[in-house]
Length: 373
Figure 1 (tube, helix red, strand yellow):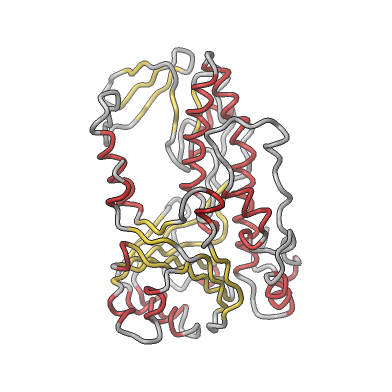
Figure 2: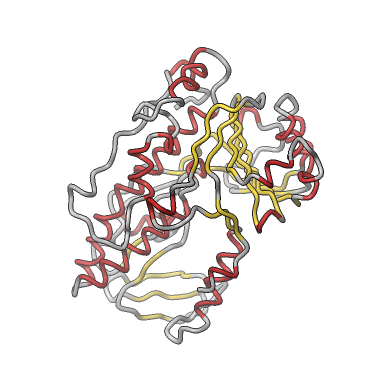
């Protein structure tokens, strides 16, 4: 893959700011390359996907077919049937069909429906030039931090893309404070414009208001997940899940695509190590299932802390954020947890002791939660 040609920026780290614009915590990532082997980049997802697709064009053993739906599986062979009526045979089938997966139920032997988390996400890209032209927002582009603005029942995350040509912002809010048309029960996304966001964030600090004002029409997404699955591998031992179909998670840890990449690396390692495909797939499941589920649960913890109303528990959060220990509610602010996340080499098969999962960070006190669980 021609990674060098992709326009990208090295992240300075994660910056946490309250909804009034007061900086609470910086978590620098200037040591990521020296500690973990590579920089932390801001990259437009479309650019990365295009580079991956272009890389496959030089591989004769890769055939990408778009717009063809899988309608049936023969798990024992294994093989699958596509909507054009053709059967496709293979040694192993890896299903990466997302949170709306239809094969997940068959693999687990029971219906598993995604659960509404209580939040919706507005994903927006705006040109950077208006931010650069404004002395109060210029630093958002020239100082490439991932800025997290935290406030009552919502938060915003912003960072530059394509070497500062674009600015990406994700605004996550609770259903109860969403001023637009709700995403329907059977919908995953709906059209929206910036009127509702300008109104929703009208009392927030200037940078957030500025970003809301720059947006045009866009899609808002319902955020859903589910708890840890019993298994990722079909009892036949020849078909397995990968990515969001097995571990959907909210974007609050920026780990959705990262965990799917870890899946792929662990799968390749297991298939290379074991002669038996069933043995390889079960080793892959053992390496990945609990780890990915733990990361997903941490997005629920962050959801609670990021969206607190002002008050005693918000004040306690701000104090806990200052200390590098397991009680810090911000995942990356605990060095042990950050090392567990970033130092992991998914291409190596680990033993049980090495696969130990850390304790979850604490949740806020129940009475302070803005969610009814």
